[in-house]
Image (cartoon, rainbow, N blue to C red):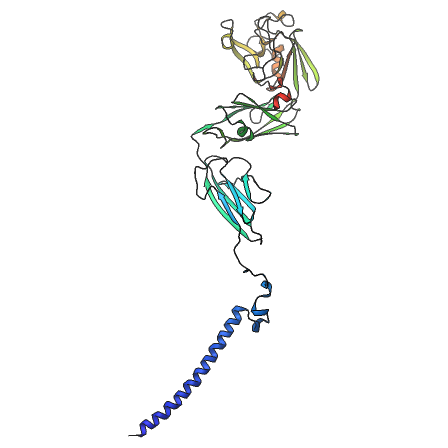
Length: 422
């Protein structure tokens, strides 16, 4: 009866001693494993032979975590997802606690918006207006004092205007014109912010020459150089009116590039007193033609005039230019317009041939001898018509009339350069 308890006590004692030894061994193994883990992850002194306290030598003394976030804060206006955004003045990018290094803005087709980062790196603004009804994406990056970058991206859409305007321009794209041809743009709405509109139109020339714009009223803007264009000049007109607020609530909707070429130099001089016209081509007089100018009661304007239209045959009705029913000629041949008010150089078949070169009998136009129907190429009027192009200059002098107004036709050459640029 006593043998079983005695044997069990002996085993129990051994078992307790065995568990104590086993517990020590497990604790020792666990501590060793923990040391290995700490050494591997912490870069401890024992494993690496590193610096004091197990700190990475590369970061000693910095006092800052190596992967800390940038302190620079980028702000973009308008906010992400905004719509009906104004085309001018709304887009702004700024940085605090850092400087902007990159700002990229582009529309949905990838066309970039030009802009400039301020000298202090604190802000960016576009150098021109935005287009209307267009989605734009903005990507901006700034760096803090430690060189760490912070980026921001937004997308917004500009307003869709209810009221718009366009500019009707001359000359036409691809045209070859005379040396007197200005760039003339007539707007479909009166402009109350001419600076914004003019800034959106760029006219350049090759070879380069200074070109300036001049407003006639609030709906017409012309551009020209100080002197006539040089023969062979290539002129480019960039119309970037889309999104320009020309007047409150009225926006441009045009974005177009137009190019034209200046042909040979032809300047013809009409002497109303001598009743002649001398045609000068590239510095040489190539022909002198007899003419008839305005009669004493209906004299011809003096001044520099530019051919703006050409018609082989056209109708001329005195009632349309303030002469009542004095004339209505349905088939005036070889007519070329010199003024909006109705001054032409044209063929005349109804006056005796002896009139040309001897008498001034017209209602203010310059007449050249011609035949009815414009079919005879040998007449003075046909000869001149065939050798003239839109943009050629005709100067009238010695007429007993005033100088033509610069806005009456494409005739801004009758202003001095100081007047034009003022």
